[in-house]
Length: 329
Image (cartoon, rainbow, N blue to C red; front, side):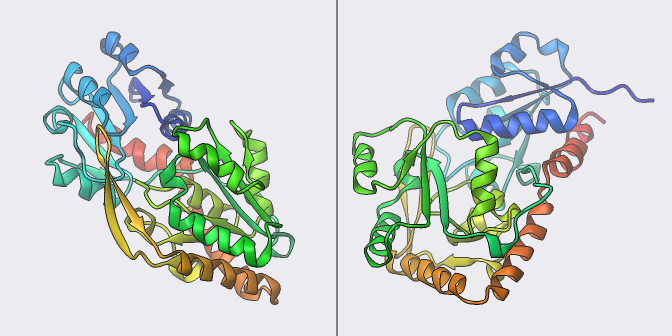
């Protein structure tokens, strides 16, 4: 019997990346080490390090300090890369979660060895469509998760129909002064950090539609999680979402144009959509919910079946694991 490889899993700063790292470790029985530099200090203890990260400067340091071919970088990006990561990650292995991320990395000269999507926890049971109602959204309190065009659509919808049935959760502390106005502008929004996992499951499971206002993603975990509960996703249709969202089972909003926001480590590629188009999508959803819901039942089933392909036990415990093991041959 082959000896189990010694693998450490670590993750960069964003909470979503930590969640991915924890899921990879759990699916494989590997050790999760919160600080990647703790792995570097004990690098002889491990055969491989899986590092779930983006293009920040810690990625450069991990690539530089670890022995050649020792790290599997699970890299996410929301646009063109700015940091000089290429020579440091190309000494190792690179996995991207979407074809969009693969494209962004390759434009910088990064060699991408595989595209493996993120995995999610699949609920054992979900409520029937007849018991679901309203709109749900949760996102960090940052502008690209609440772009002006999305907020204009929301504002107009509330003027026409009121805010009953709209549950929006602002997660995390405010990052920019202008965001402090958001809760005042939309008094029905709730602020909660963190949302316990049981409560999140309840929110996904009791709502009929998921409002993905976000105009930039490297993957987009929450729309896929919503799909696993049978929610119908209303979302701008940009590259990262295209990898998994079935357009025949959801309400996709066209992208009008793209623009770049410069950060220290990358450019965020924003997909600007027309507020009128998003408003129309919400009103189509409202009309469908007021009908006999047979089409929504079909869509809900379609989304659940699609999401099952991304079960973290399969994606991380089989597909990702097989890739890691292939680097040890």
